[in-house]
Length: 426
Image 1 (tube, rainbow, N blue to C red):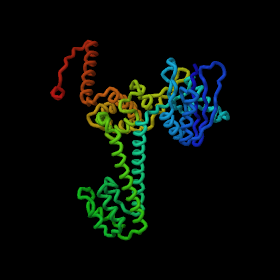
Image 2: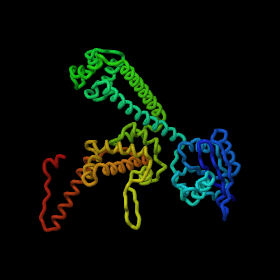
Image 3: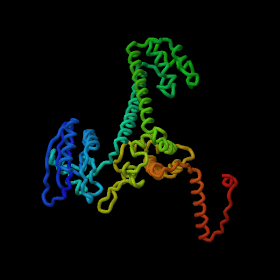
Image 4: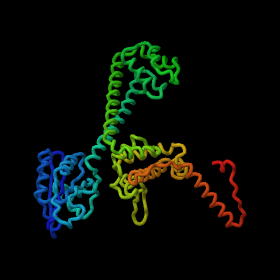
C-alpha cells in the first residue's frame, strides 16, 4: 500500500510542493505543484494532500512564513492513516531547520529543495524543530511580546537619560530609578513648563537620599529651558506611559491564559533566581508538564544548557554549548546570576565552590544547567522545591571531616573527633 510524504519549500508568496511514495523502490518519482500562501490557497493545499493520500508533511522553517502553512495544515489537513503498520509518525507535521537542508553552491532551486526535504526525512538526516500545540504557541506569542515591550521600556529609559544630559538636568545622578514615581513627577513638571527649580524639587519624595539643595542644583537649568526640549521630554514620558500600559495588559492576558496552570507557576517561582514572570515564560516555552522531554538531559540538550563536544580524531577541540532555545537560555542565565547571589541557597554554595576553578562565566553556565534539570524535575514530576543549601553545606563538611579522619588513621595516627560548641549548636 502506498505511503506518501510531502515536502514543502516555503516562501513568502508561493509554496513549492512535492509528493512522493517512499515505499516504491528505484528512482524517486515526485508529483510537483505550486500553491500561493493566501488562506484559500492553503486550504487548497490541504485538500490536495487529502486527495493524494499524504501521510506525512515536512516543511522548511523559513523566517515566520512557515507559521500560516503549519496552522492551516494542523487545523484542516486530515491524513488517511489507513495502514496499521504505518508507524508512529503517520499523520505528523515536521518542521526542518533550514541549515539541515542546505544544497551545494549553485544547486539550489525551489522544487529540488522540496524533494531534498523528503529524501533527507526518510534518511533521517534532517534536524527537526519542536513545535508545540496551538495553545502553547499562543502563550509563547504573549510572553515574547512582553519581553520585547520590556526591552523597549529599557531603551526608552536610556534615551530619556540621554535627553536629560543634553538638557543639563542631572536628576539621574540623584535618584535610584529615573522612571520611578518621584522622578516622574519632577519630569512631568519640567515638561509642563515649570521654571522654578525649588517647586520642581519639592515634588520629590522625602525618602530620597538627595537633599533639597542637591535637587534644586540638579534642576537649575529648567529655569531657562528651551520649549523644544520640554516638548521632547513630554513625548518620551507619554511613550513611557503607553509602554507601561501595554505591559500591564500583557500581564493580565498572560495571567488569564495560565490560570489553569497556576500551581505549576507557583512551584517554579519558589526556585531561587526565578519569579512569577520567569516561571510564566518557562512554562510557555517547555509546557506546564514538560512532557515533550522524556529526561532532564534531553531538555538541557534542547535548551543548549550543557557542554558541547567538538571531537575529531579522538581529540575534543571545544566544549562550547550547542545552540538551543534562545528564550530559555536567556531565562536560565538570568536566573543563574540571581540564584548565585541568593544567601543561604545551594546555588550560592555551588558558585563559591566552582568560580575559583572555572571563572564566573562557566560557573553561571553550570548553575544554569542545574536550574534546567531542576525545572524539568518540578514540572515533569510535580514536586515542590525545598531549599537545602545550609544542610548541604554542613553535610559536605561532615563528609570531608570523616574522610580526613580515615586518611589520618590509615597513616597510623590516633584521631579523636570532638565537635566545637559552635558546630554542636549549628
